[in-house]
Image 1: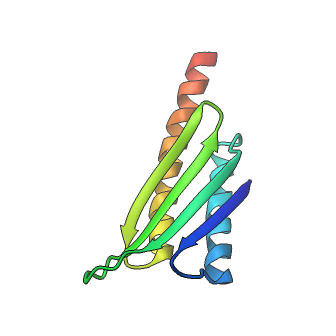
Image 2: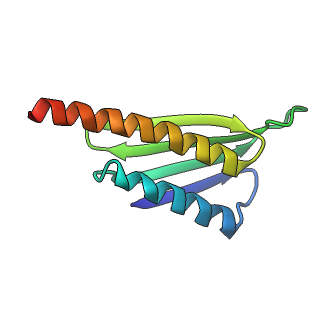
Length: 101
């Protein structure tokens, strides 16, 4: 799967990009028809500690799936997003299998 990472107002280091790639590659175990993933990383200028925003858009046949999380660290956000996407993809696959049967 092709993963596009865009960091807004800062430069993401290679470790973070590799981390995102590894996490998103695991989604293909649950749903093998993923075309690409767009990941947007933003730092919000607030006084709170939870100022990192991660938004992941998965392009799959039949429509896109979007998840947005705000956390203290980007790694934490990516993990939460992947967890949510995993649940959504499992549901989508179950619905497809129910239609086939």
